[in-house]
Image 1 (tube, rainbow, N blue to C red):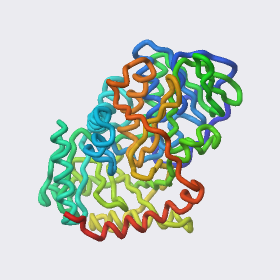
Image 2: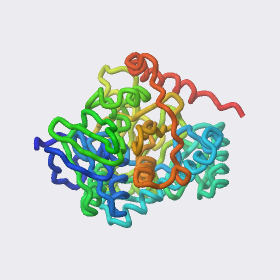
Image 3: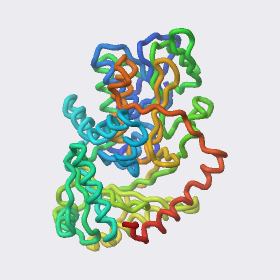
Image 4: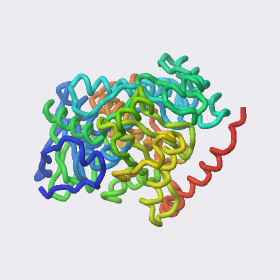
Length: 433
């Protein structure tokens, strides 16, 4: 097969190499077919294979090539604005099960890493959400109370405790969830692929799916050079659903807006700075809509990122913005140099709630990571695998809905980056109590 070129990134430079799997040639039969070799698809493959089922993964580029290999690597056990009460109000018992899945999602990921000794630079040091204004402290306390009521170990931290955690007085308090943390995302994707293959799953790379359909009792999945026949199907392409083959699942692709998320890395910090800035090595993302986020990697680089509007000189502008943000919070860094800058899509939808869809008999998909796909995608892969292998829907966190495509999707996609201006304006005002 032709080698797939990965976009330049810190993760492409540091993840353990992977021998590419072959492209699909001819016709194969399997119990479960999975479209997409990212966190969801590979987790689904592991779950099917570890329970003795046959499973085939079709990846259009290479394992981890999309969002799974390009994100910040934060393992976060909550979603952006999809709060537990709303899940339960919308979906009842299925919503309650979804809340449990979300709250357990980071533990599901780290337990999987430990069980199979995945080499992914995994650090379960906790995830911290500091309040960027005094009014957001109440939001953090409310979220702590909510997740504690559902049985999860969220902890509220005062301003003084926040200063100790972060090594900065730039924030006002916050929520700590000790189950979170961070990983090298491309290393995790490749480690998941190795685990799946070790369990006798079959992976084909450079095998973009051009179509799928239900014919009788089977799913027929086609690529340019082959066919897979399967009893069950899992579509796990998320933000990249319409990117490689626009005609693959157009209603699903148009139900999200792919938005570029920019990531970057500083030089490795020296020991003195490392001991004072974020000494506990938590993953951090604050309460801003125009988010400030950072964490260490295994080489003591700070991994951060950001967003800017417009396409002019975007790399330099986003690099400068993120560096300024770190310098404001940690003056001892001055304005840090960024050695790596890269980007990938996240799948945003109108209310920032992920969606679960039924494609047909024994056919499943989820879409809309909204920037929280590392832990949640891993957990959803396991859940979709259970659905595809016969677990009753009444036992699963799968609140099924119909796709809701954006009207005039192409225009919505072009104007989506201006949403950042509204978020920045909102960040300057205190929430109504």
